[in-house]
Length: 277
Image (cartoon, rainbow, N blue to C red; front, side, top):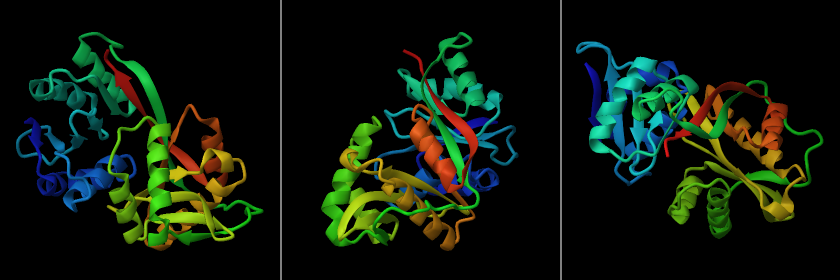
């Protein structure tokens, strides 16, 4: 049957739910973003895709895209990635990049450009999963706590700064901060009544949740605050019932990769962005 496109998050989750749940960690982006769309946290139009090998088959691959941003591929066979190209080209003829695990991203890029190796790797990340949590010892001065309404101006500023540091597009960071604080999903490390670092986590969906973002202002880095608040939010997420606690790291940042492994995170898979221009 091939690919079916929809902008209905409920339809997507109903059809793709069993497929995504089988690979919940590797499908974390699709699960958390579609859940945010479903519950009203993301209000921009999102394009969802469902792939079946034949008409009566269950969904066995999925992707999503918030145009004009790049499509995010879930785990899928190379065949599905290649078959997605003409479907997307019909609605997005000027697509400039794709993101996914190495095999399917490269298959998509080769089909899109008409040549093997047609995409240039512009970014690589690694997905980690928490094993045995090992908080920093000794811990830095201060303590972890849930962010409160009084922290909203500061954490809004930090969300914006994190996005700028990581090259993400702009957004409504005030609303994002308010939703995370109201949902009890944003923690700060507090020293003498002053927040010095923060870490947030996605809602638990299909047994998994993803820590993001973790941010410490430049002038306060190197003191252990980021590791301490990450450990705190990781423990709280596991205590809240998450079977898998995940996070992504930029492979170009050896400091963060080493830090999260010291905390007990173990590498699971990689993702890359391939650019066609």
